[in-house]
Length: 150
Image (cartoon, rainbow, N blue to C red; front, side):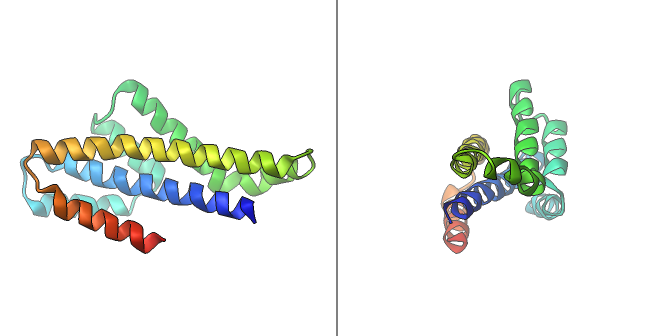
């Protein structure tokens, strides 16, 4: 059961990162524009896959070159977790302490996704502060979303 808990934590961390990327890109693109543009962009980005979001972030020049490399790693690791873990799990099962290794790898992925999410959150806070946006309602909405996930 620990395996499923660790998988869930990693999946939740990846989903949180995806949502922060959506918010960051929409904020970045709606600079000095109306709330309508932000809302329209935010809704459009919600329909994108993680790979599509990463391409959007790279086009928007939000991140440095090294951060863009991390975005590629995020996609690679998330895709492994979603599309290939079942196939690779067979290899772990036959290893001594293989399931423990897989659980460890999932904990590492969760930490990686959380670190990238924090990087996005810092950029979001910087953008909102620079624009004089009241961060209290934003923080309240984020806290409510996090509470709903648990």
